[in-house]
Amino acid sequence: MTSLAGAPVPAPAAPAARPGPASRPGPRRTAREAALIFGRQLAVLRANPSRLLYPLIQPVVLLVLFLAIFAGLARVPGATYRQYLVPGIIVQNVALTAPTVGLGIVLDAASGITDRFRSLPIARSAVLLGRMLAESLIFAVQALLVLGVASLLGFRVATGLPGMAGIVVIAMTFGVALGITMSWLALRIHDPDTAGRALFLPMVPLTFISSTFTPIDRLAGWLQPLARANPVTAAVNLIRTLADGGPLSREPLYFAVWIAALSVVPGVLAVRRWQGGR
Amino acid sequence: MTQPMLEVAGAAKAFGKVTALSGVDLAVAPGRIAALLGPNGAGKTTLVRIVATLVRPDAGVIRVDGFDVVADPYAVRARIGLTGQYAGLDEALSGRANLMLIGRLAGLRRGTARERAAELIGRFDLAAAAGRAVGTYSGGMRRRADLAASLMARPSLLVLDEPTTGLDPAGRRQLWESLATLRDEGTTMLLTTQYLEEAERLADLVYILDQGELVASGTPAQLRARTGTQLVEARFEPASGAAAAARALAARLGLPPEHLPADPASGRLTLVARDGVGTLLAVAQALAADGIAVADLSLRGPSLDEAFLALTGQHAHREAS
Image (cartoon, rainbow over all chains, first blue to last red; front, side, top):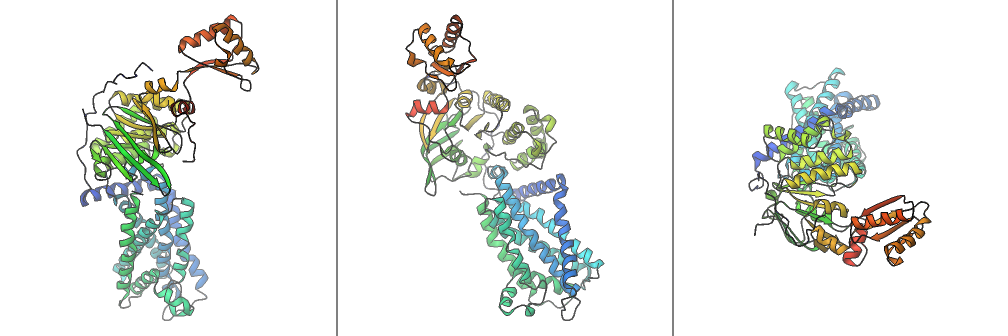
């Protein structure tokens, strides 16, 4: 080094470009940023199509497996078991996919990219919104796949195409709502390995203690209140009613309440948590 | 007096019972480079994360270009570029796609982002790899791509957390060159490092942190003056030759033998280089005159631990970070 001690260091010229003051992004900027994150998620899938493999195989495996196992055992009043089971499989598949939404968020945080996003002047909700948008597409494709394969096996939706569209939207909505809750939980767990196990575990009782595979009054007595209060039951019953063309009564209300419960407060907490330990 | 680009007054942060920072002050004028030097657990990363709005300070005032990190985080984020310890890139996407995404999130239009990405890809020697997934990059390429990402929106303040840790010597040299060019162009930087040499090479001002406190600060030359001058280090084979060489050198240079400590295990002896290269040459001549073969002879700066010892009278605390 040259003898700099005490001598002032000459100050070079300041950089030319300097952004103006930035404030918290409004809805328009938030939407633009969420769209960019949505684009990122799609680009990741495009660069790595194998990531779509399991999300697309899983619903078909579930459908064929449970139909084969339970069709001979189960009897349900007023319908074939196939007709009864398919709505349950659509929802079970959503519930088993939702943990991967949280896992993706934990993996981002474990790499440096979440810190990078947090240091950018973007809306706190943009990254989570963009991710949910991309995940909703996967939930929709999965639901269409189950409906397609099930139709080949003889499953019928009495309400026709509008009913099918409704079923896909219900699956998407339920998936995103569960995904939001999973994201919030995921942001409290730093280790991807732990997150994987912790997020998947609740899905087993959640899908089995419900009306997914059997009418609730056939379950053991102590399980029945749990099954009635289960969000999976709310989603399955709504889809089942649409598929059977039965009159809707309280199903849409129960479903809407669960969607709100799984997305509003957990969503606010997740967004807050995402910005980090500030 | 111009407003500092970065102003830190009384910054304090504790995580539970662990004090990460207690009352750190520093200021970086526009166009200058400040280095935070210290061992693991010194609080360097915490300070960087506070400046980058990732961690909220418990106390103190921290301003970037006049904007408070707590009150105006969005204004601060619009002015900084962060290169963290872990590359802030999506490994599944190409280098170019990463730069585009980060540039556009920072508010650039598509066309502007494309031009800027192309410019930085050329500048950081990433042209051949720009279309490849970042996951396939070497450590050095990843750091350069990460640095390029931090520069997409032309930040007023570039914040770098241990930018060369984990790089091989070639990768480190290349990154130093990139940072030196940015410095020459007038980019203001705050960087952390565990390497005295890195701080000396890049920084106008060095702040030495230990256990969350500032223990010394100054220009590299000022710190150099306080940490003692450089050392001449000679290595002999076999190692037992070091003691004999030390005696011969002491006699020839007219120095007391204790000025030439020799380590019989490694075969190394060291001597404070009062005349810098002059001392190195004198040692070389003295060894040649006595016909003593030397395996290695070099002039080196003090290690971080030696510098700590000189500045604080104690060894650097080494903790798990």
